[in-house]
Image (cartoon, rainbow, N blue to C red; front, top):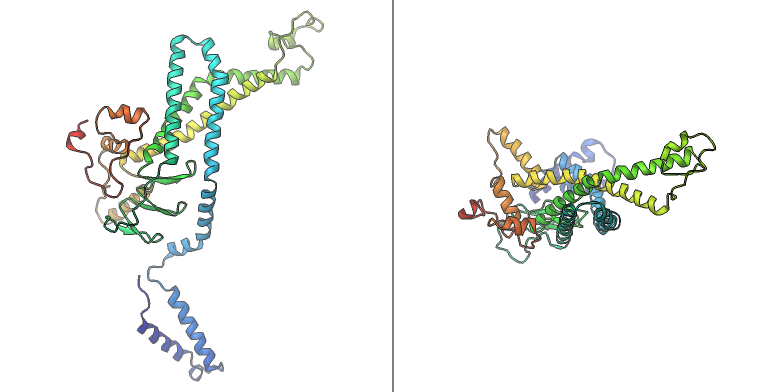
Length: 383
C-alpha cells in the first residue's frame, strides 16, 4: 500500500495552487478562497488515495452496511434457530413415543421391536449428544497473549496474527481456528474443536430422518388416505352414516341403509393422530433431503482435507497457478482415509467404534495453531 509522503504533498499543493492562480486563469475568486479549496481538494485526495484500490474494494465498501446488518440479524436470531431445532426435534419424538411406539409394540414381531427400539434410541442419543457439544464447544481462537505463535498473516479486523487455516468471523467478531462457517442453527462457529461434532450431528440427524421417513411411509399413506376418505364423505355425502363399508355405501338404493350399523365416528383424536403422522413424515423427509445434501457436501470436503472457506480459496489458487503453468496441491490433504482419521481423531482400530459410532468427547488431533504434513505416526497409518 502506497501513501502520499510529505514532500509529495507539498509538491502537489504547489502545482494545484499554480494551476488555480487567478492571474493565470483569469479567475476573479479571492486568493484565500482558492487556496482553501485547493487545500481541501488535496486533503480529500490524500485520504482516499490507495494504490491497491480496485472494484472489489469499492464493492465491499458500498455493501458493508448490508453485510453488517446480515451479521447482526444472524447473531440476534441465533437463539431462535436453536429453539426451532429443539422444538421440531421434540415434536417428532412426542409423535414417535405417543403414536408410533404403541403401534410397533402391538403389530411388529419381537425381533423387529428390538431393532426399532435399539436403533431408534441409539440414533437419538447420538443426535442429542453431538448437537449439545456442537453448540457448547468453543470452535477455538488464536491466543492473544502469546507472541511466539506461528502465523501466516495478520487479520485486518482483529489486527492480530492469524495462524494457518484461521479466518475472521464477522458474526462472532473474532478469528476462528480452522474456520469452516458460522452455523445459525448452532448459534456458534464451526471450527477446529467442534467441527467433528457438527458433522456427526448432521450425519446422525440425516440417518434419523431417513429412518422415520422410510419406516413411516406406509403409516403416512394410510393416514393420508383416511383423511381424504372422510373429507370426501363429509363433502360429497352429507348425512349418510359412515360404516365399515366405506364408499360402497353410496351405491346402495335409497332407504336401504337404515339397517346398517354405523361405525364409531371419526373422532378428533383420530384426526390428530393421522395429521401427526403426516406432519412427521413430511418434516423428516424434507429434512432428510436438505440435510443429506449438506452432509454429503461436507463429507466430500473432509475427504479432500478442506473446509468450506478453503474450497473457494483453493479453487482460486488452482486457477492462478494453472495460468502460470503450475499445479496447486492442498498442503492439508493427507489422502482420503487419513483425512477421515485426522478429522475423527482415530488413532487405532477400536476408535472407529468408541469415537465414531459411540458418543465421545475426545479432543481433535493438534492444537489448531500448527499443521504438520503427516500428523499421524507411521504405525498409525496402517490402522
